[in-house]
Length: 154
Image 1 (cartoon, rainbow, N blue to C red):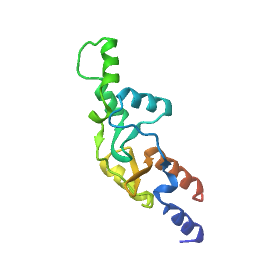
Image 2: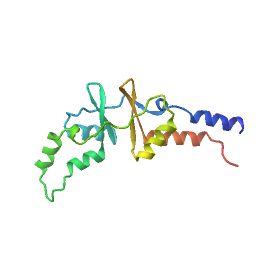
Image 3: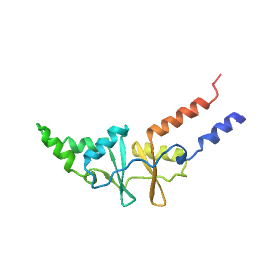
Image 4: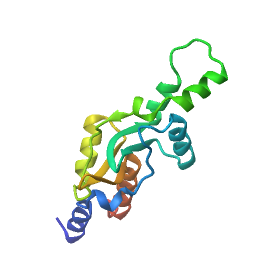
């Protein structure tokens, strides 16, 4: 392998901390699901870590929120939707004790975990504290960066 190829391999061994989103927005288990919906909508997010007294206790996704808001009732009125959004707590529809990864883990490990478990994001935890989140978008951005650095095949 030439020097350029070795350089690409070295860059590919970066760690989660290099590409994660640090200090992500969070919700608590006691927040109404409306607050999670609003944060996701405003930030363009598809998942939010759920933190209670500084500790990660869950993760809530846009899919979890759609399930909670779209219960199998044939016909509903707007007041009922508003009631659900304002009175159902995040803790009742989040995924508790989510898979996590440490900031110094190899990026490939994060990608492997996400692929094997068919999940779109992993909270990043150091010393039992949430420090970031790594998502499929972060991984795709990293892949694009690697591909753009790769020498053209000739």
